[in-house]
Image (cartoon, rainbow, N blue to C red; front, side, top):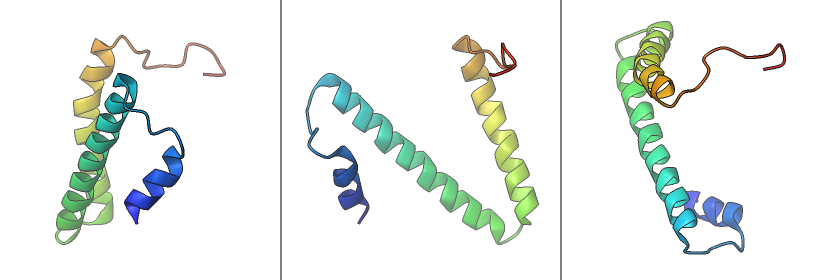
Length: 83
């Protein structure tokens, strides 16, 4: 079912260039991380409250992604009132 949905999203653009392959690899990596998150959250929900699982998930995510954002030179605050 998921594969059929992916084919519908891609449509007729099934090229095999470097950009398409890189994008596909990133999509597979995102799916692996999402599956890991779902499995970890379901295991944790058997022993912890929803609020605790969300808090731990947020802390871990911030701990991992803050250094990535800083190394990439991203702004952490909006530069204008409109973002």
